[in-house]
Length: 173
Image (cartoon, rainbow, N blue to C red; front, side, top):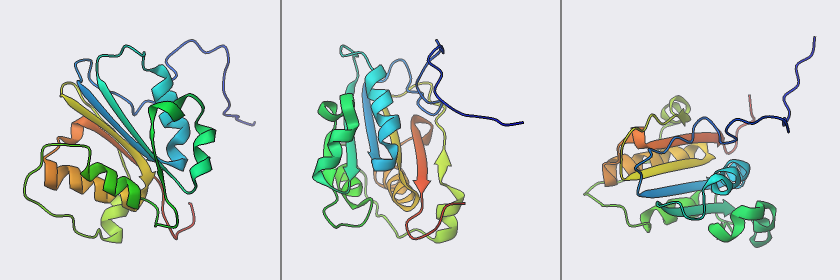
C-alpha cells in the first residue's frame, strides 16, 4: 500500500488550514511568518474577502528582497521584512514591537531549548476576542514572540495560533 498526500482539485471544503480559527467578531488580525509559512499565509490572505471587516496586518520575513515574488496574491497585502543577513526571526521580533498592541511592563528572556521544544505548536481555540494572531516561523522565534505576547501584552493565547515550523541549527526529525 502507498499513501499519497496531494492537492485535490475536486475538494469543495474549506481550503484554510485547521489552525486558522479567528473568531467571527474579530476586529484585528495579525499574521506573522517566515518564508516557510508563506504557503499558509498566502492561502489565508486569499480566503479573506477584500471587504472583510477586520483590520489585517501581515508580516513576512524572508532572506532576500526578491523572495516576495513567490508570494503571489499575498505580496501586496503583506509587509515584507528582508532578513539581509540578520538571524532568522529578528525582523519578526522587531515587527511585533511596532504593531501597537496594548503594552504592560515586562521583558523577554532568552528561551531554554527544553521550553522551546515543548511549545513549538499551539492551536487556537478562539471563540471571542478583538485581536487574533497567527505566528508561524522558526521555533525559537515563535517561542520568543509567544512570551512577548504573554509578558508584554497580556495576550490571551486562545486567540493565537503559534507554529514552530523548523529549528535553526538542528536537522528535522
